[in-house]
Image (cartoon, rainbow, N blue to C red; front, side):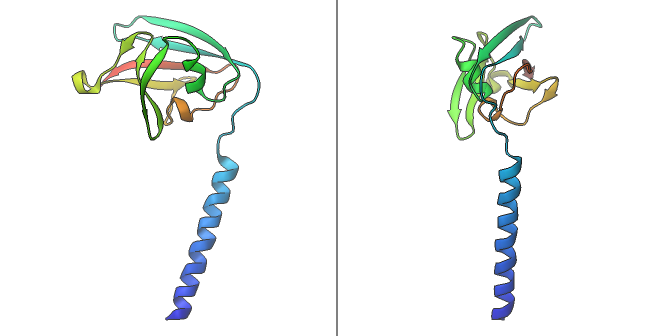
Length: 130
């Protein structure tokens, strides 16, 4: 029985090492230096506004926070939960509204603080209900 437990423990350690190595080599790394990104805001009424942000920040959250009044929200375990963009607040509890974040037309699974930016990228926040 001891031999099977040792083999299982060794296999588990090897598996965890493999997971760590894959994560370490595939994790996003911030691009250094100045970059310019575009943010399009599509409001609930269908109107839109476009903002060009030039920054040396590594994440979208830091870049957008550098523009006074552009975004705000609540800090949580995964970073900033954006609830207000360009003066419009989405409130899930009121009408199931939220801000959908996309990069170059593709929906992102990361929040603003987990999104690394590169020069020339186009982001959009779309007011979404449901």
